[in-house]
Amino acid sequence: MSWISKTFSSSIGRKIIMSITGLFLCSFLVVHLIGNLQLFKDDGGQAFNVYSHFMGTNPLIRTVEWVLVLGFGFHIYESIVLTQRNKTARGANYVSNHAEQNSPWQSRNMGLLGTIILIFLLVHLYNFFYRARFGELDPDINNNDDLYTLVATSFKQLWYVILYVAAQIALGYHLIHGFRSAFQTLGLNHRKYTPAIKFVGYAFSVIVSAGFAAMPLYFYFFK
Image (cartoon, rainbow, N blue to C red; front, side):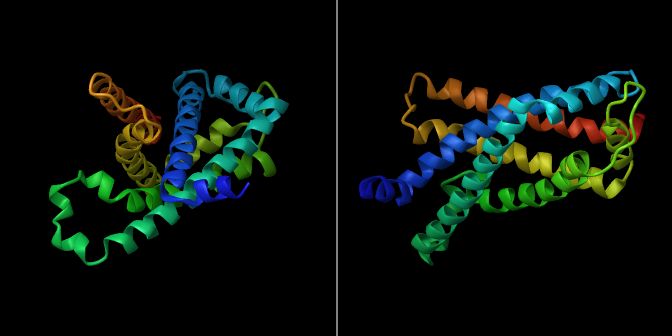
């Protein structure tokens, strides 16, 4: 087992873990976005509350939540380790080599982008996930927990809207770099297919981040 631990504790091994967990989290973002689009239905939140009730009571979904937590945990931990290793390896030479001319802004600031996303995630989990799972929400007309009202109320707070939108901008930049890098790390790098992967990555990043950012803006300005 020593070769396994040595492999996955090496820089390339950690990058592989980052890539796999990152792509897994991308799939979660798609599912989460599709479910949250129920917020835009003009039905007083009934569809969203039905969706939330299903996600909160389905045994399979509750099991997958733990897998998701582990995915986030591994992704965050490995990113911290790799960031520290990169800083140590670069040292003073990083500045003298004019890194800003050799790599895009988002690739040089993945740590900063990740920190913004993590702060948002902690606030978001407490505000919605924790209160939905362990708090007491009033029932809607279908006797489901009225999470929609909590969402609508939260998105009327300017500070939360700003935090939410800023986090989605950070997420977009994070995904632009991470999506393509994940495929490259996993060896899926070919001059014929890489441009397509890069295009899909840009489109995915913009659509997902814009989709999430649209939710607080919609409630703050139009509801």
